[in-house]
Image (cartoon, rainbow, N blue to C red):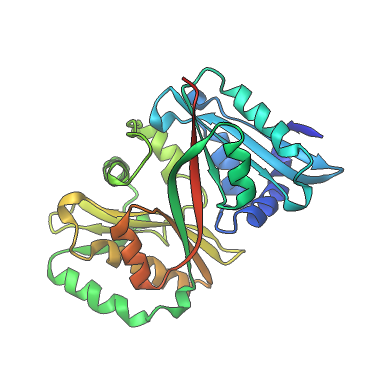
Length: 307
């Protein structure tokens, strides 16, 4: 049976997604918040598939509002034990029909042959790729942070938590968008209004303000950051984003912020930290390698041109 997703399905969906995408770090509360705060212009819809009472598949479809009005995104995930029976195809048909009329549809695969064949058979071609890496923060030398923090303090920089700057949302919005715009994307990003960004990013329940860090320049400006999504019960975390304003790069500020998140993770019982980076984002990949993040999986993006 396939029907529209309902909030009581969230716990089962998280269990399925952890099986399909182990680096997917969202709590039940965070998942529901993310679904509920999709802007109206996203035309977001999602469906759940069941075998009896067990949730064995999920699909979502939305306009890629961050790319503008002519691009969409679909996702289809089916439990491995329930594949090759047409369930994924039926979910995909629902998802594609929901965004009919757009010029391009994006989809992401887990890098496996099944997903690749599925998408190629439906007219997709390979696009960008993302390397997901994992770190046990307890393996990082805890003495890396203090001397770097002291050195940067001597240069006038200060390290604060996101919780320390609750009244600087608009400034953090500008910082986040500037860093995001410099990262590799399939299309140029469209600017997002502050109120929408705040609700979608800054106020998401899994973004832990005590675990997320901001670097302030000598003049007080926020110039670098590393923010952490945290699943305390699962002892897992994921980097939401790390970056530095262009004019402040190559000074170790992203390293400082990311080391601070790692230090926090150790002190708070986190045993696995995940981060995903475009395979062309060489500076961030190099930093992650130096800190001990181990490549785990490559997620392949696909795109289907409809006109």
